[in-house]
Structure formats: C-alpha cells, structure tokens
Length: 197
Image 1: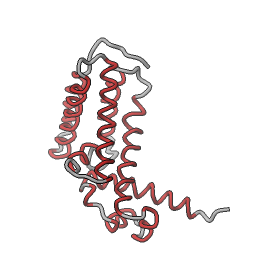
Image 2: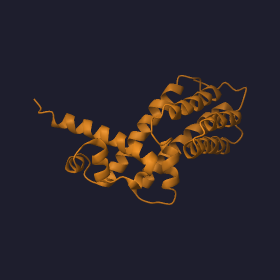
Image 3: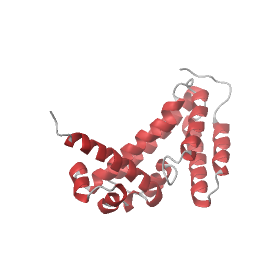
Image 4: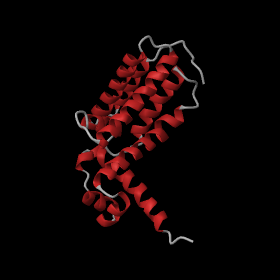
C-alpha cells in the first residue's frame, strides 16, 4: 500500500518541468527561480525543492522535458517515413507544425536556449548543448542517407533556416517566416535518393 506521495511527487515534477521549459522560451532558463516556478505552477517552494532538490535540477528537468516534447511533436511523427529525403521532409513539416501548435509559448526551446547558453559551462549548458547536437546529428544522419555531398554543411544550413524562421516569427510576429524557412530548408534536401526505412 502507498499513501500516494510518490505519485503526487511525480506529477508535480512533470508539471513543474513542463512549465519551466515553457517559461524558458519566453524569459530564458536563467530567469527561472524556485519562487517564479512556484508561482507559475501553484506549488510551494518547499514542495518544489523536495521534488528537485535545487534550482539546477529544475533547469536540467526543464531541458529533459523539452527534449521529450520535441521528440513527441517533431521526431516521432516523422519516423515512419522512409529514411533519407522522405524523413527529412517529414521532420521539417512537423517542426513547422510544432511551432504553430505553440507547444512552447515562446517558440522553439532548442533555438532559444542554444543562443542563451552559447558560451556557458556547467551541467545545464552541457544539457542544452547535447540537445542541440542530438538534433544536428539526426539531420546529418538523414542527409547522409539522402545522399548529401556534405551532410554536416547541409544540416548547418537547414538548422540556420529554421532558427531564423523561429526568430523572425517570435521577434516580428511574422508567421509567414515559418513557410519561408520550411521552403528554404526543404531545398537543401537532396532530391532523387529514397534512402532506407
């Protein structure tokens, strides 16, 4: 028999991590405090510290939750497509849909935190860097399968277009920037090579 404390703690952790990830896209990870997260979630500061231990663990949980949501909304729906060009086009389409669905209130978590933590060190910076690297590695692998001459350069170009589209949409309120980014990124994908499943 259990008194449900662990289950309640898990629910608090998931809700707080997701809320923190959303807050990070608006004000940055650095702006998140135990107090601001408590206010946003309705949890007590002591309750959050009981679940996470300290602020750094909250930020790490936010990055992990953002990864979970990115996989759920962008990567997993594209995975049934054939590897290579078809999967890349699916990834790009789902990336645009992920932003338009406003999964996060301030746009793409990866784009926002990558800029914020560019010159930082420490566990949170390492987690942010790993998340970005994981996305670029995925693009590079699929581009290699699609027959790209230089998969790393092609992944760089695709990522640059997507980040620019996200920035323009969030900064200028220009939703059409996502269509432009999608079109330009899609043009980087090699044509004529199907790849594998």
